[in-house]
Length: 305
Length: 321
Image (cartoon, rainbow over the protein chains, first blue to last red):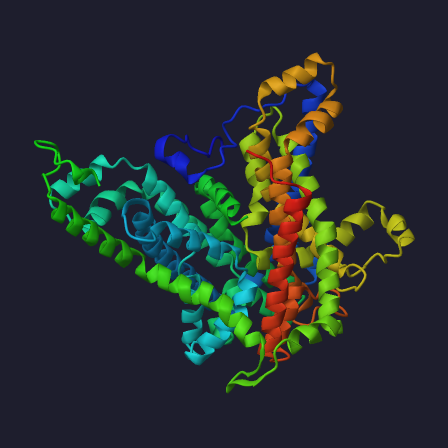
């Protein structure tokens, strides 16, 4: 995993990426022992990270009585996987699909609305644009919890708390985040204007210029927004637990809470660990391939602060 | 607009003043069209809801029939003496008081260690940050398994012969860390310190690497040791980072929800010890079915967060970057 964080030059720097990887360590070079101690600390802490996840994988191949023992599975068995995938209610495949569909739609929505608004705020001149952009950023200071009751009442009145409406409620409330608009705007600001001017001379309208010229140039920012939003929505707990009430509508995180609290599987650890693995794996895979964008999430959180 | 002076033979077609005004208008219309949907959502679901929350909180609000009686600030008066809310407030304050400094300390420590000239820096950084981006529900479930009565933690301390120490502290060999009222909240604190320390490490790393090298060289020339250099030079220079991380951490601490929900359920079991403010808000909506009261809890939470941020700005004035 050497140097997963790519070079940041030109427009990329606008994303406010925290360049931690390649910057030279600023501490003076210490003695051999100091470095050895550093390695011991780092490896021990890394073990604290890996052992729990490793243990969940090992446990998923155990029987329930065996899951209480230290050590490797004896015997190795796929019982828990079979049980988790076929016998849990709500079904794990349904949970997975719900998570995927909701995260997918929220991601596409943020990409679309975020790039449109980001482009307008970066490039188009219209009255009050500065003030409106400030307002977008100011919404980051409103905690979700304050909005819970009013949003719930509004959506309840609109019929979005029953049936398929439950999905729509979660999607609507996550449809656009200020972070997406901010990231897109900052990126568009760094793209040279000549290209747009050329398109205008050719008689292209604003939307055509945006779609054909600017959007293809903004691929890195689009990727960052997509990954941030997908990860955030896939893991999200607060809004889903407010609106997704039918068992068949739950997502993976809600399913886990349900199994633990009311599903009667609270201590049937091997299948629970299977669900933990299924809920974690897609994000782990994304992380391995696109680590730099996750670090950008940190930079975006900086905006939130 | 640049078109004020018609550029003959320039890249742009020469345009008259009227033409540029029409262009400006077209551009403004396009701008509004581009932002219409997202701004509409922001206006309704963010700004509008801020006002609506205040409106709901001063009514006796029926979930089906809407506003019934105007009760002004009665909900807020009731909150001041509601033992359930005060318990949630205390629990959350306790959580913040322990979790914020603990996680900041671990984050800073990791940042300093990772910042040494070592191999595999990227690897360590990446692995320390991973728990922060994994699903909170998944990590909490995994944590509950690890600290269960016959879970990995209890097994390992038994195998290492550490149980006499734990017996001295009055913990049985199969102590139920998440299920016992003495340790449930502390187990959430440890869990979140584990998952969030990587995030704080990244914040601190960025700051550490912006400290110029000559500062350390000067300290070395003055004969300062490692320890001294850290406390006298590095730590004070990280002030902006301390300020930023502490603010982010405090705001996050008062929004504790996912982990408390999965560990203790809607009622904050055991014995309400994992009841956080946000969990109490959820409880007010879905257990007590008292929407206006819940709205008042939300407003109080918002005020607490705003207040903390302001106090912090007072105590640790934001330095000029």
